Length: 318
Image (tube, rainbow, N blue to C red; front, side):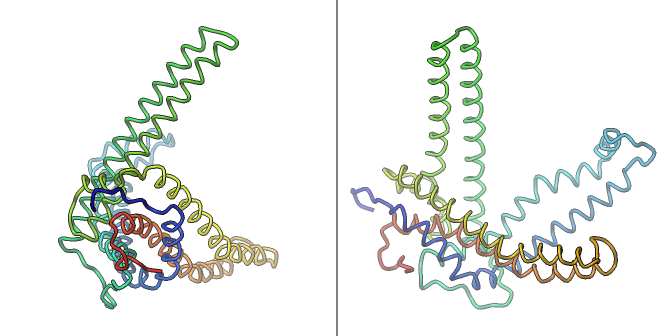
């Protein structure tokens, strides 16, 4: 990268990420439908097994909810299924979806990259495995530093509260203000770690290697730019998702209200059939909304990586 410090633009990465989400939504749906279907089947099977174990372990002789829950968790089969569902299943889902995130990240970095036009796209090779490991380590780092941040912030707030109880008047404000500033500063330090390592995911997807050190060096001198750019991206993404949600689901709510006014009610065979038909019509909208969100979320760090790696015209997508 040379001796000079690369600077990432502030506005372009969030705007390009959102535009990418719209323009490449067809590609994302094509490569993501099978992995998503696998995830649904895995979760569905796990929930079915857990429900079966729960039914066999349930104590129907008691009406006390606490006793019923205690009976469930005393059953080894239900407890094992619950642990697998809550602990290991998210990792399996992360592994399965790695192929989607790798393909979307590469497409958001290089305009010429196009995943194979296969009806059953499911690539899970060394590149995807490295991305999965990187994603796991990055998520673990965020969680661990988040817990440390929470402990320090809670300690700062607690000490401030105890100290402020011993004084009155303006002296109380003199104690509370530094405590609040300390809590804010600790939160900024946590964000500093998270954002400085953001390119580690594109590095894994594009360069097929795990390097937290290069990600850290790449973002040197860019924290405040990344902070503002990330805030803009989240604001734009949430605004777009909210508008799309309104456009997709408000008409459905209006139809349901009209059905109720027309005398179908909210229960009964006729209303159930109409609601089921309405739900089927909404499935494509749900898939499209989820695909757009996935594409934009993967594209944002990819565009940050593109600018900080100084890959020039190779990384120009607009």
